[in-house]
Image 1 (spheres, rainbow, N blue to C red):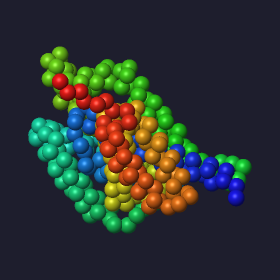
Image 2: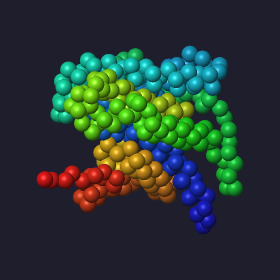
Image 3: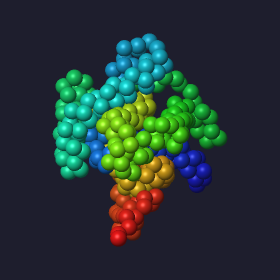
Image 4: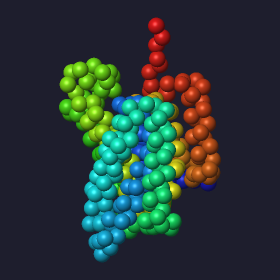
Length: 295
């Protein structure tokens, strides 16, 4: 049996999954790295991006490309605004206490789910792709839109990397991450930085949700798996490590693609869970994380 077409298909599917997972996990890693907040509602921001994308795209049904473009711009912006409101109305009021933020974001996730269930309904909804393009490979044709997802994710991750390293906002975020009190003493508006970081993390998850809707369907419970896999990626890559998150997303996405094509998606999730267990046993700080030094 010729394995080449199966390996190519598995690699392509793995790249698509890795791209979506990378965006979602980067948002989670960014929030934890700067704010030291474990956002359990992160999967609901992903779901809101997908549901919002469907709602916006349905307003212009005769022009799928225009509807999708509007969804890709408006839905993440609305989710980012909701994240800012959640930060100022909930997280800031509890002082970003680690235990309290976990409980608060769990409550936020249930509230978001129930609101979407009451307004959107329990049925899954599909969004028409912005374009139909079949990329021919030697053995089969492949969706051009899925490769578009990979390209958009690569551009966004590259822009995020440059922004964190070269922009003034990125400098303030890194300073706040390193020492919150010192940054505040030097005049950095830590409260605004936290709101901006929380919104940025939510918007990255929402973009991932909008991108995946034409390939899957929007549903009010669709945030569970992305949240779990994002935690897997962040743990494997190293808590708060952007390079580690990117590398772990690619590794896990490609392994899931291979496992799903040759075996089953269930086995792929089992392998990911075992990978987390091995990392926690042999390298608790993650593949790219730095071990804490004791005086």
